[in-house]
Image 1 (tube, rainbow, N blue to C red):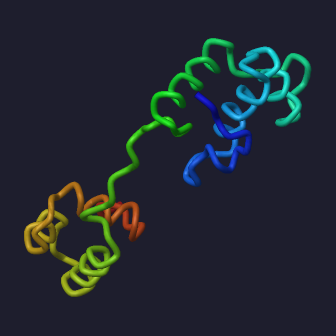
Image 2: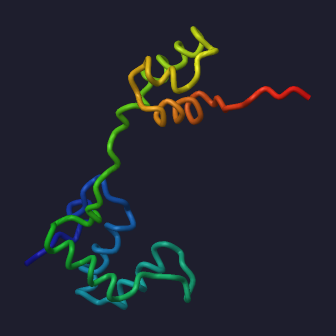
Image 3: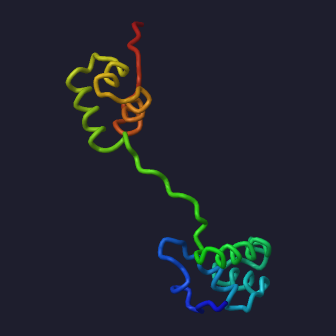
Length: 136
């Protein structure tokens, strides 16, 4: 099995530079783990005793590359937001301004969203915080 010596050809655009460098340097050095670690130190300006990937880790990355033809770790991406989208934030703000005396639970029922989602929008997106007036 032959591999390209050009890192741009063996690495997808979505992967990081560090991942592509690891696999590329392994193949460039004819499978030498020690030479790969040495190149890793030089490339990322690590000291003589700087932390570099373990030999077993490098071999695991290369075997994963051979089976999947990708240096990405294969972790699934984060799913898109379904409730805290800008339109929902605008709807919540309009509802609060229209009727500020209504409770958060009441707003969540009228807007047909969960109480937790509404509270997240209020707290994280609109920077509203719950409070009670206290008579001193």
